[in-house]
Length: 75
Image (cartoon, rainbow, N blue to C red; front, top):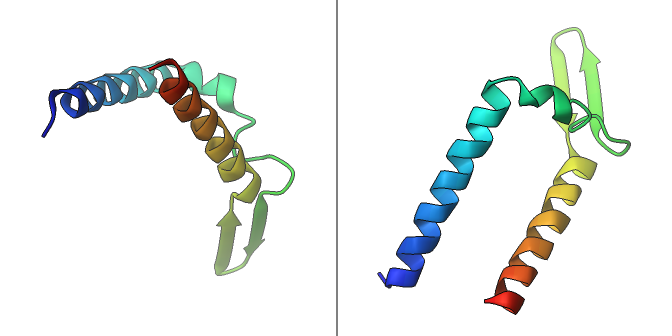
């Protein structure tokens, strides 16, 4: 394993811990809209529940792609 990959994994882990602490301590109310975007499919019937967050995952994909593009561009 290269030292650069190790640093990236540590930074990613710290970022996940910080995000988890933020959501756990009440910051989740800021993201209440996430998962309820137009394009997220939700079907609820007696004995059956389907949830497909298509628009939310598309948004996550775009944001992560932009962040990785910036990281490669600046790094």
